[in-house]
Image 1 (cartoon, helix red, strand yellow):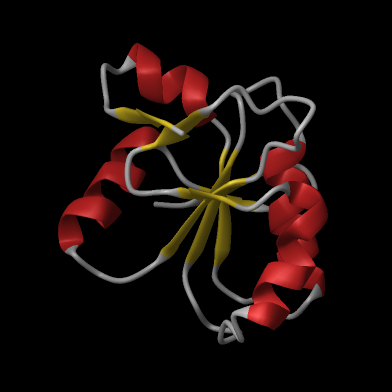
Image 2 (image 1 turned 180 degrees about the vertical axis):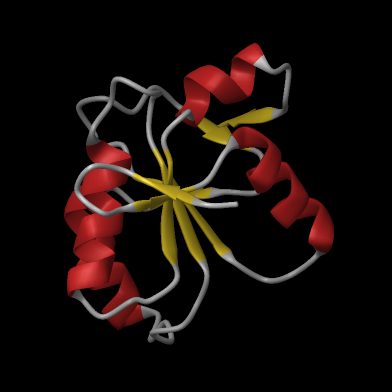
Length: 116
């Protein structure tokens, strides 16, 4: 049950991210916070791909256009996840979603994070 933002970016909820992780299905899970806003925390199972390096990452890793990609940032007030999902859509990625709850909602739910 995906929803979308006013700019048409597909979104995913905390519960949906957990279901995706538990499904064992492979997917890309990226913290897109830029250096200025990154404070050494990732949601467990994700890796950091700063917003300004999203295009380079997809090229360097040769990520298929239909790969499931979930991007997140600091929380609901942070625009970077939506910006990253929009950027991925413009690059031709058909299965990119923004987890707008981000680190803030993840931690509020008591779910694991990693210090990096």
